[in-house]
Image (cartoon, rainbow, N blue to C red; front, side, top):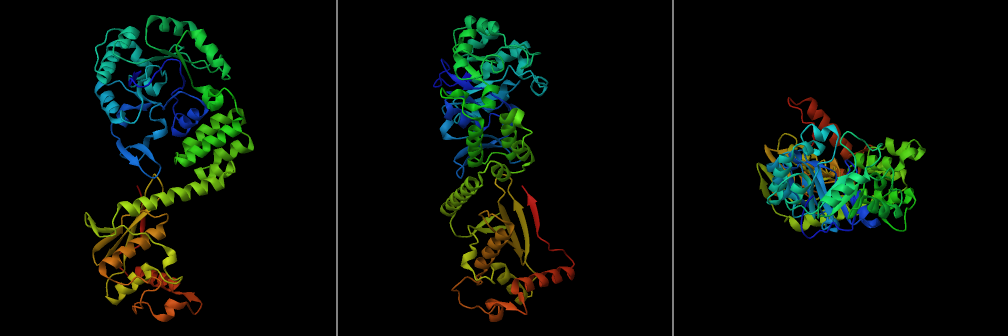
Length: 469
């Protein structure tokens, strides 16, 4: 455990690091129920070192984002002084680089030397480090910059704050009994706090068992993995609470912090345990989005309200941070513009005005290219008119709205009317089109037909594309 001095590991109960479980929603839930310290899942140094630290003002989080836009680690102010970042590493230089990347946002950094699974050991990480004390010393001293000597006592002298011990040999698995005597031997050999781990199956089933496990191992503290994964209320003295209540509270955090839906699914299935094949379990397994999962638990209203709150916050942040003036982004002219449907008559859209203007000027029809952002599924469109590109710097909730926003930017830059309510008639769209239907067909339908006809007679396709980023 390489840790900041401000976090104490004496007499604490911790949420243990668990792959695919120890993400932000589970960590916050464990804190709610009384955990003193929470560990994130093991994150591999070679992936983390490529990440960029991003302040997510919409979610009010700090995200560490990989080059492919995946959020590898997400944290928030609530857990800043309680969260331990667990790193999988076998390289002192990378360990140091990752430690420096995350040090301002976590309370401590833990180097995994206990995981026996192949994905850790084949890279010389996890339990494989135990057979290479020289590398342990190098990794420890690189991160803490202190002199070291040999294994547990060598590790202690590197300046680490605590050592967590999983009471099984590396070839053993959870089904094997935990060796309390081995943990006790380690605790007696060093003066820094030792955190006992591995008692979930045999010894710790309720909150009252935690103290018994602490006494049996002679340790300062205890961390829980599976017992907490199955029901995080094991941390509260009033617990355990009904798992249905715990799952609901977990899901609310997952929605609030835009947790990956498949990660949310996985954690809920672990809580369901032998009920995973129940009607609820099957509905959760079939879900593809957090919206689907919310429906399974009857939280559709909470999900929708949360989405609306986040969208409102996103819009306010975008409006306040980006001025309504043109800015060049490479070869694209951008403005902070949103398409507000209520500002236009039912039959009129900015795209329609831009299309009519292009025809009047004998230009090729506007061409739209749309991208979708992976982290929140928002859209942004670029329109090309007369070989020049225009785009709104704000992201929209749908592809259609993103195209309309791009059209508005183009119209405003060119000084062309866009058809807003109260705007003086420009003559671009005739009165009959502005006021309603023609022969039972709306002008939007007519525009679509013209658009298709133009495509068929054009040598170049102008179908808008959607690219996922």
